[in-house]
Length: 188
Figure: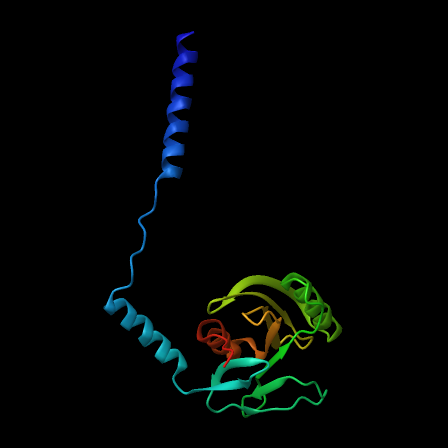
């Protein structure tokens, strides 16, 4: 009998320690110091160096490299599009049309079907942020295997489902991914 009580005591003690460990509050972060704010601002300045803010009042605004220019896709869609000079990378801004009651997931599902229809393979999804906005991200590979398509869909304060699409070789578009997610989207 003694060994059973001993095991029960050990089990109870372990449970209490586990609960105590879970209940311990993590130290809360205070307001950033001037030095921390300065470092953060410095990183933001470095990110936005040699960029331009592009967009429209309807679709919103993002940052792209200064050497990018307006581009019009041959399929005639109404997106605002920007492209690297050699055409290897393209950014598109638009609004997803659909019922006002549709969720971001509904819009993402619709966009994924559209990607499949354009021959995009290995489509995956992720939850991410575009600066302060929660977003769903879809990404996949063109049939040639060399180019990627990344699409973000999100709902800012205007309540509309906005999307940003970026396409190009993976090794080249990663800086633009960072510009979008860290540089942000703006309504004006």
